[in-house]
Image 1 (cartoon, one colour):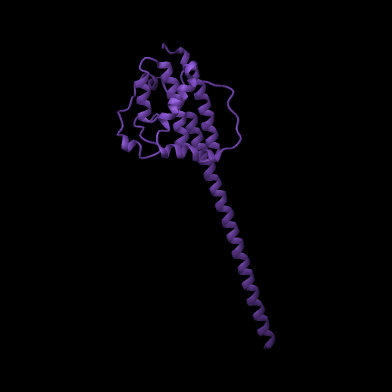
Image 2 (cartoon, rainbow, N blue to C red):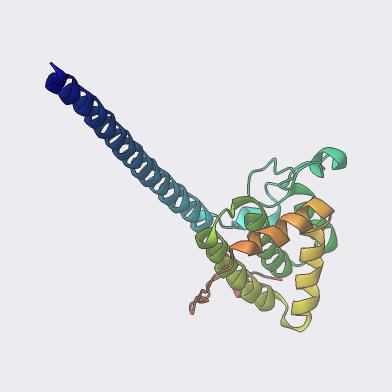
Length: 203
């Protein structure tokens, strides 16, 4: 009887150990599975955003003012980082309207400025990791080239004008600084092709 009691005690202790080990193994498995699903989600999200960045371009209708938005309500427009984009061309409405007000007679300058403004807006609204940051930097580099195609003599002046328009309030400047925390090594595209053939525009 005493031997049986000892045996049962040992078995109970062993069962507790086995159950504890199994619980740890289950937790490890769930942890790895969750990490795998998270990584898959992040990869799919990154691929989706990069595809959206690549496919976002200005059009000839944007440059010629065929799709201009109404003047936004400024308090509402400045209540978020993204602001208002009623015509959904990834250029903030107030920025787009100012470009047309300042350059009503130069489609070339508008094309360069609109493309650069769009690239900056994508940085503010689409970046959430290193891959998306690099893609927007590459897109902005091409837009900078196009800004020069439009008016090489005033390239840096026009660049600053657009950056001041897009980064016009504290929350946008703060967001712009924050996204560069994702900075990593990258290469710039060798081929630079503007969304619109700027040199083909009449003025």
